[in-house]
Image (cartoon, rainbow, N blue to C red):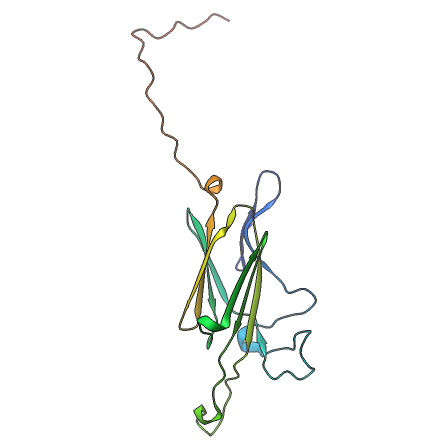
Length: 169
């Protein structure tokens, strides 16, 4: 079964495969525009909000592609960790100097981003790549060779001049 936040299904053994969004353990991370909440290692009133970045997941024959919106995050501020069965994405937006604010009102609050995914056994953890351009992080998860569909070539057998006779039952 697939939904907006998951690109996963059950295989014949009932095991989960592919990519599944994980809710944070023990806390809620709000959507990017809903405002931040403190993480367990922060004070009650955090200096920087924590956001859950929006994510699109696409699947091709060879890979899964995750596209996450992380405004203000550059290559030096992003961390992608892959463990068996788990992918975690974290980002830290650059802070802007006070002088960059227009002066009338400053609503943009750079903060930290965090999102986790459960990945199936069909993902090759050694072939995960990531790049970020203008605050858009693209994570590519290559499928293992055995998980990819393959086309079987049907050979032409030796032609018999007469087909074998049907056996009586």
